[in-house]
Length: 149
Length: 388
Image (cartoon, rainbow over all chains, first blue to last red; front, side):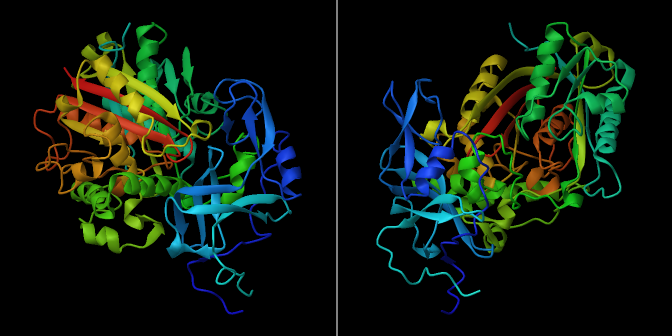
């Protein structure tokens, strides 16, 4: 396939910087490797939060993992068109409530907008750690396929 | 208990270099310190309190204190990024008020220009930072975390790229008079919009310069200030605050200056309408816009309309800001702009700013800053200063 336009945001599978390992993120990484997207919710006040913590950032109560829908909407984003390949960093508000820092992938940058529905897609980092990214809902396969090397 | 009137800024010095490949960071700190002490009419041996932040080489304040061979009884290395030095003035005033020191020295220096460190480079990964496992893959550089705020501000309030550009235009009008400024050409709104997009909606000219250099301040007890030959610049009020992602309740429309600003005004017993000159940390144009709103110079969401058409230009606008050219045009040493904000406010209050930008009868000024990353985790510090 020919190289797509410079504003094409690819999945970059296997090309994301590796996140440092942490005892607090290990269960998330293990579930993600099975395709499940987890977040943490407080067992005391009932609120979900992001990024996941052992103690609730709202009330310091105990928290527990739960599987999230992977549905969300774009809160804000910026396209770094000068980078090779171009990429977009974003905040996405999850259907469960919290807003998380992420990247938007597999889409044309010019089609992105605040409020747009997006869905989780796991890419992987250089060492194979799953990286929770989002792509606009309803985007077809082309034009976001990986460009040829 | 208040710091209002308990301490004065007696010395202020901005290192004239903007590129120092042949100097060490420690040397730049010490040269800045020597400049500020000479400005105050004091010597190194008068210093008994020392303040620095993460740009100081070595462990906290210890290496620089040893390099300068100081004898200290008060040390503080509070680090809230580029806003640290604004907070240090307040901390120095607190320490002086408590009798813990008499002459406090604050230094900043760095050489990111020579070292090739800019705001578009990936920030070093701090493995133990609790956010790193969740954010490192996405490459949150400095500029893109400010761009996220700018886009959300545009979405919520209708702020435009043209309005943001006016902030750069105003800074450039001031920088033309500063022989040390990196960018001395006056630019137009069109110039800003025509500059390359770095992280949309922020263009290259929405971003501050990357410069080597440094600065220093000397804060002293009132009796000492009155014994010196410099104009009296009183610390009248201060505030500091921080903001993060709020557990996931992310709201990029306001900064921690929403809390630091009102606290500083309240302690000083003044309102934004009383301010004659404002030093506002300008890492990016959006940083200025949000602080103007958060300090109460205009309503939230009205920052774009407030800055348009030259409100910030000294001589013609109603709120002259960053009359040295600011970080946007003059200097952003160590990629940390807080100390130059205080220095230019001191120049204005002394009547020692460049004649073309000196504010008439400037007896009340504010210096405010945002340190860290506006779009994820940042600190804010605000200082109200007055001329006696």
